[in-house]
Length: 379
Image (tube, rainbow, N blue to C red; front, side, top):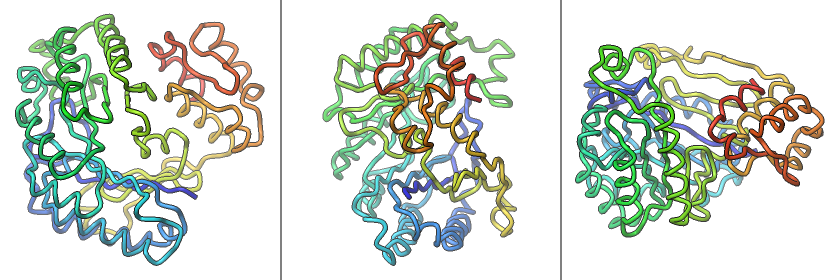
C-alpha cells in the first residue's frame, strides 16, 4: 500500500494573526528534545513504514525552517535507514516537501535541505503587498521572499510552491492582480501556486481585531470575484486548476495532497499530527509536555465502516477539479457510486452544482463557488 508521512514542526518566531495550528513562539530551547521524540516515534512505527510503499514526506508546521537544518536531516536519515531495510520503497521516487517562510532561512540552510533529499519547497508568501503582510501578522516582507526564492533556485530546487491568500484585510482586486503578476513573472516561474481563502478561526488575533472593528474584510462577493480572477489568470498562464485551492504546471501537482484527497494512507509524527491507517483516523496529543514525556500520545477520532469510507471518498474526491472517477470507485469498493448515491447526486445535478461526464463526477463552475454545499451531502 502507498503511504504518506507528515511531520509536524510546531516552532515559530511569531504566530500569524489568522493561525490556529498547534505552534509555539519562543520554545526553541526544546527543539532538540522535540526532534529526539519524533525520531523515537518513527522507530516505534517502523513496521508500518517497512510494510508500505512510502511515496511522500511532508514537513509542515509551525515553521519548519526556524529550527536547525541538521535536525530536519536527522529525521529524514532515520526514515531512510528504516526504508533501506525493505524493497517496498524507492527513496529516489519520494516527493519530499518542506514548508519555509521568508526571513527564517538562508542559502546555506536551503542547500542542506537539498543535500538531505528534500526536492520540493513550499514558501509561505501570502501577498506581495507589505502593508497587507503586516496587517495579518507575517514577520517577512516581499523583498525577503524574493531572496528566499532566488536562493532556492540557486541551490537547485526546481519544484517550488508559493502560497497566496484571498479575502485579506485591505486586499483589493488590484492588490491581488499585482501579487499574481509578480509571482508568475518570476524567473523561473514557480511550478505550483496555492491560493487559500482567509478563514476566521476562534481565539485568533485576527478574530479579536475583527470583533473590535480595527480591521475590515472584503465581503463575500468581493472574495468570490478575487477567486474567479485568480482561477482565470493562472489558467491563462498555463497552470492547471486541479483542486479547489491549488494550481500547477503539468506534472507538478502536489502528490502528498492528491494522495490525501484520494483517501490513501498517511501517518503523522509530532505533536497534534494526524494519521489515517486501515480506516482508522487518529492524532497525537496537542499537549507538548505530554507529547515529550509520555508513550500514551494517541487519540482515536474515528474507526470507519465501509459506508463511512465510501462517503468520505466522495467528499474528498469532489475537492479535485477533475472530480471522482466512477471506474476507480468501482475498483476500490465494488459498487457504482451513481447508484449508491443516486439521491444525493440527483439533487446536486438539479441544483447545477455537479455534472456527471462519462467516467467522472465533478463540480460545475457554480459548484466550485458553493463547494461546501456539495461536500455537506456526504458528511
